[in-house]
Length: 95
Image (cartoon, rainbow, N blue to C red; front, top):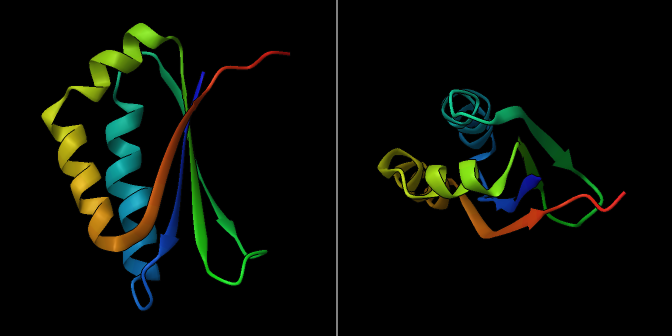
């Protein structure tokens, strides 16, 4: 399964957001059981700068355990100070 997060960059905070995502958030997620990959993508097609974060997780059991962690909640709060219109999806591959 893939945990997919989409957010818009707060004007003037692009560098801070990228540092946060590529350092602090990546370190947390890759240390969690069942997490195999963490990627951050930059999207230039829209009129606004966006970031797409994809986190590959082995199964829903691991994901549920990660979601309740205080550190994950703190990271989410910090993300909300650096980004706007944060949206999350959990994707399960069909084929």
